[in-house]
Image 1: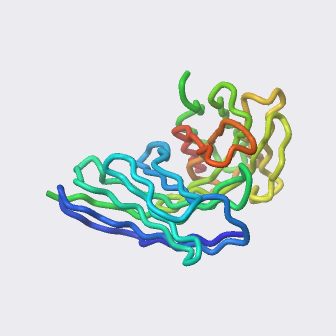
Image 2 (image 1 turned 180 degrees about the horizontal axis):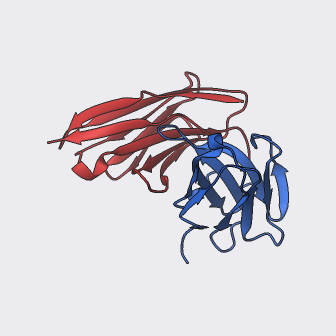
Length: 110
Length: 116
């Protein structure tokens, strides 16, 4: 099984950079996912890491260290529309179900 | 449509009633997942299918919950004799194929179930 931990809430200023951390404990490992979820909407896929290192996609980057059981999501040039919940999720193997953390609610303020 | 479609979007039922929630995955997606999301929490796994085969139902909270995907496409999650603790958002997700390592799951908007 897996256990996923991430902070409950964070606040950051428009235009700034914010890093959302996630730690995980797994029996197997086949990837770490980040999703964005606005209130009342579906989770939207942001990024995926299976190898150590940084994956960059525009304003969003995700980092993974398998030896430390640690990942982070980095959001640059924050915009008000980035206010949402960010879900960290791990996968044990193959195409099996995801195990989600409780989500980090990010508030972007002016 | 292009995305995962779930219906109804909202469902209100009286305690003890049966409900059925529908999920129409992205066309061609082999794997289909059901999750339950309580307010302020992350989604929690209920069950998943590969084509019509239900490979894991370990997350179903009781035998009142039943899911099927008879033709390997549309899936239905049924809850019998609903209880107030069943109130939650039920999310459906699908992904493209088995054995492709980085296939993300694509989620529908969910069905918000309220049991009175």
